[in-house]
Length: 454
Image (cartoon, rainbow, N blue to C red; front, top):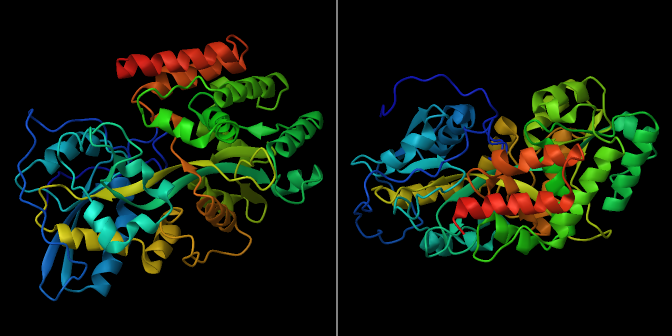
């Protein structure tokens, strides 16, 4: 199958979550509707079968070029275990897949599986298969609900976070706090902080010692990660998630988001961020952290392999701690997922492949090739990584997070424009003291309401 001309591979991390919108076009299946105003016609769903049988079949799979190594590894392993299935993998340039996906799914020759991380209007336009019957057949509903939440859509086809399942994750981006082990030890940190208060005490001590306490950039969103990390702990998790999923009546103006704005502004006033934070981008602060500047660094698991290589043995990772010691963990994450186009003629086989992605074999490949936090039950064995590595710390944190069912989507993914039109620019004003926490919260909510037409 050759649906696309040759295109260069995308240079951005292939599994970074959609929140860093300017860098993440590899992952986002955008809000493009299908051509025309009518939903495509489709045959009724086949009788559900969880067995492949012996008949030779071909599965057409479309993914982004920035997923090439991972998808090739997964599909090769699947075919080795299931030789009756041939997977024809087509790679589209990551920057073009969002525009091409609706047309492909509505075509006379649709793929059987398509890579996606957000659903856009694909459900409303009738382009994706409702996977509820397969969730029942395979027991997917026994996974932690927050692993599936971002791939659910309500009956109106618009509201995310609840309703029917239209995709399955095979791995996740995960955000948290990296730290320089030598510098953290010098502060007296012998284990990750158990509470936000303990973390703030470490930040204060680092700043008092003349260190950059928290390496972050605010040109393109790492301060937003730190802000949401706080808001996750200070807010009711479900209330914040409802706002991200644009549920009717949800508001950003809640106590937790306001308190987090006060805290971030105070962190800026007390010098915890690097000088000129608003002019720094994510690559710059990564390099400075690797070079030894900064005690803590807020980012995601897509940086773990780099830190393992360039800070071998001297980098650690923990989730933003809760308000009270032992409290439930909550952290931002985004799924790397796949959906089955409604017009596929191999829906049962495609669903079998989605289920196979939860197996130990597939989970190990996800970690080895891409550093993804693997989807699946927290009862499954954790894929092996080098002892003492950053990757091991990330996987340990992932297990803790799944045991508390504490995944939450990114604020930046609430609407198409909220990150660049409100979150980043308003956070820039906040850290400069040019807007108040109350004005920050109000501005974000106003932009959100404007985009939703409410």
